[in-house]
Image (cartoon, rainbow, N blue to C red):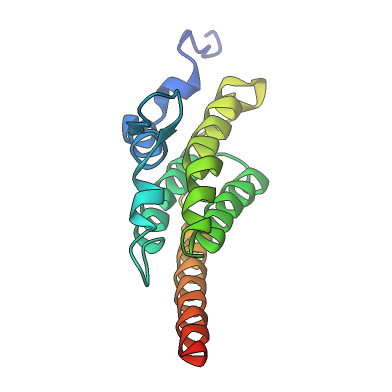
Length: 163
């Protein structure tokens, strides 16, 4: 009996959830700035909401981390991806400056590209991953939320001391 050989020529990247691509696109590329080739998504727009505008996009961005985990991306790459989410949320919490950073940095598009690159590489043919990094993803969400709240409390206290 012959060994089982995968006859699939379909790259693993095509097995990414279509929702992952849609999330990255909506959060980072949804709207073209008129007269330019530059695009922004809902992430910097939602970031304009005082007191937590970075929390919702960060929660949604964690879907990309979960999808990456499900596809067996190594922990080191998941850590880098969550670092992108965290950096975007931390700097994004700074009023106006953070929103400009979010529009430029495009953490979700970066994360999607990293997933796609890994799955299309020779490393991407490993078996699918498990959901064990879910704990790591939840910790990332909690850290982003707490940091966002702390930054806004700092800005409120700063404004209170000025007036």
